Length: 272
Image 1: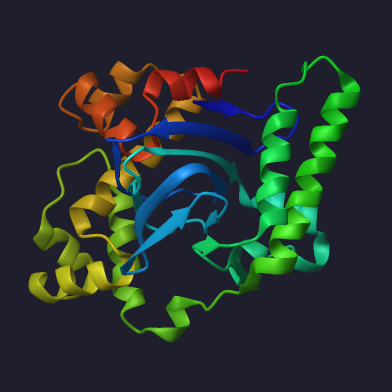
Image 2: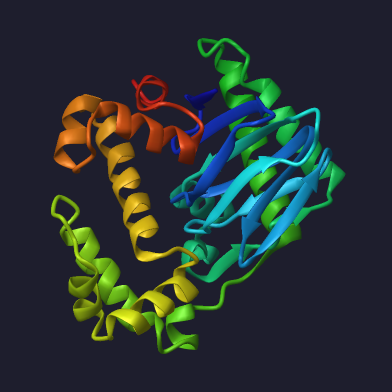
């Protein structure tokens, strides 16, 4: 279940329980962190597979590619928070106003009982009546304390890959080309040309740099555009046609495999 936290703009809450369902590789444009309540979760991240047992915390930075599945025969129950960059910047103060660019969360699996307890406590507070002004203030205070605790203990300077690896630049050119042509049928040779690389070298470089092959990265960009259009109130059927999905069912399957909810559920969660 996904829902927008009404007391803190820019925060989504999510909780789920599953045994056989598996998330396809995807990323989020927000900081994502949450605790495992029961069972265990296995997921690919950063080139290897990680396992988070009950009591541990998963942390993901904006753009981190990952998937997810249960690592327990009894299934996995967990809760997550998705916090947009401006929320983090505002919470931590003007002296780190560029935290989205220069700071990251260590992880992706952390053993920190106090942090896990703070996440559970914040989730529990979301059951309060939104008309209760004191409850709203409490939620905002809990979120602030949670973010300070999270980044104080588990934050670190982010290495700018664009400065560290020369291959990042041609990949970024290809990504910019994708973003400008999401409504078109894109060919591998066109993406390679935009990057200034041969198709074979481009494919290998793109995957090594982003963690995804070009077609999967393109699907992620399309799904990110879907989320933005859903938040604006556009109907899923029109979005599917606009972005080149076969039909609305195709869009729904892709969307749920990445985010765990259908486009309709996501739209209802973000409806003001």
